[in-house]
Image (cartoon, rainbow, N blue to C red; front, side, top):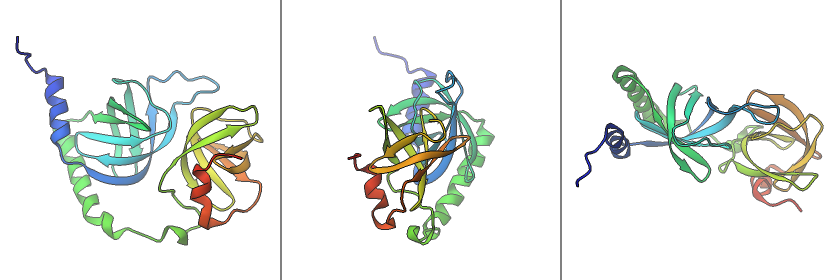
Length: 212
């Protein structure tokens, strides 16, 4: 018997046909179904890497399950409410829940951003804090445990990260092959100060290199 397409099937087909633009935008997200405890957080930093008026793709440190509600916020596109429709290796795709009017407004913002994004390129090394091309890294703790993390930004003296836990201030650890201590907590992550000033030229290589 031939299957009759459901509304959900049709929605997904529309999403997959919809032209998306590729971006690299700092954002935050909340997993509303996440069980919060002393070690697990509901707010995380992420990078929005693709968007259309129907869906957005996040490079994220912590994933939920297909169907979980996700609220994403960024300066460029505002607050995006939706649910996870597909899990990726280091993130997930969110189907955006919006009215037709809301989608038209989002499409206009996307079109406007697309027109100007090629003129917004800057020399990443001209700033004290830089956004790494690859924001994925690994935390190494003194007891031998490891944890994937998302790098928000980095400088020669430290790094801001978002992860599935928030170590206590003073905790010694390594991120990649960079060694330091946790010095500050904030809403969607924590800051690590390196034990010594690092050379800016090989910061990103050390982020992904394993600890010695």
